[in-house]
Image 1 (cartoon, helix red, strand yellow):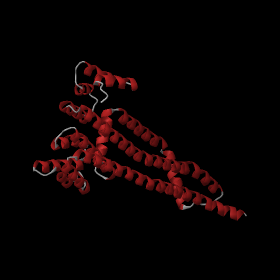
Image 2 (cartoon, helix red, strand yellow):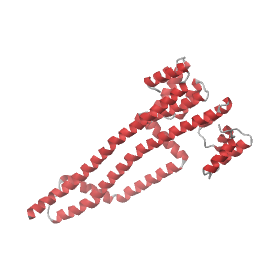
Image 3 (cartoon, helix red, strand yellow):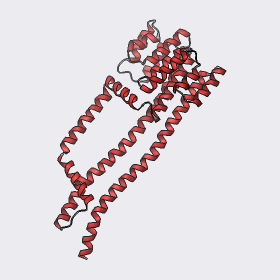
Image 4 (cartoon, one colour):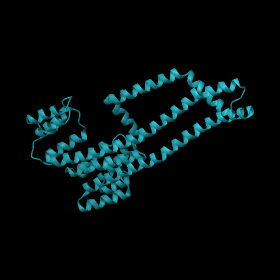
Length: 324
C-alpha cells in the first residue's frame, strides 16, 4: 500500500530485524530476480502451508496486499492466544513445583531434626508425623534416582523444544489428547474461524475455504470427525452455516450469526467476529481458572504446613508444660 515492491519491503524488514539464517535475504533474492513471493516463500521451506496457499491465492487474484494484511491479523490473533494458553499452563506448573519443594524441605530437613529431639526425650510422634517422616526418609534414600529421572525429563523437554520435528510431534499429540475440550476447543474454534475469515476475504469459495481452514486445526480426532461430517453435508447441498452447526464445528449461536453474514454478503467479517469472541471466551476461561487455582493451591500449602507444624508443636508444648 505504500507503493514499494516486495523486494524493497523485504530489504526494509531485513534492516529492522536480525536475519542470521538469511530468511529475508533468500526471499528478497528470488523475488528480485523475477520470482513471485509464493516461489520465494516455498524456497525457504520454513513457511506454513496455510500461509503459502493464501499468498498464492492473493497473487492469482491480484489481492496480495489484502491477503497479506489478513494473514498479519490472523497470526497476530493466533500469537496472542497461544501466549495466553502457555501462561495458563505455566502458572499452575510453577505453583505445583513450589508446593512440592515446600513439602520436600519439610519432610527431609525439618521433621528429622524434631524427630531426633523427641526421640532423645522419649516422646512418641503422632502417626501422621511418623508417616511423613517415613516418606521423607524414603525420599532421602531414593534422591539420586529421583534426581536422575528429573534430569532425563528435563533433557527430553529441552530436546523436544529445540528440535522442530520433535516439537511438532509433541504438539500434535497434545492437541489430539486435549484439543477437543474446554479452553483448547475455544482456541481451535478461534483459529478455525480466523482462517475461514482470511480465506473468504481472499476470494476462495466455501469448499476451498473450509478445506484450507480445516488444515489449520487438523490433528484432533473430534475436530477432524466434525469437519469430515461438515464436508459431507456441504457435498449433499446443505448450507455452510447449517453444516458447521450440525457437525459441531460451530455452536448454534455462532451459526445463526454466520447466517446473517451470508445473507448480507459479509461472511468473512462475521467469521472474524466469531474468532474474536472465541478468543475472548478462551481468555475468560484462563482468567477464571487461574482465579480458582491460585487460592486453592495456597490453601493446600497452608493446610499441609500447618498440619506438620501442629504435629510437631503439640508434643513440644506438652513437654514444655510438663517441665513447667
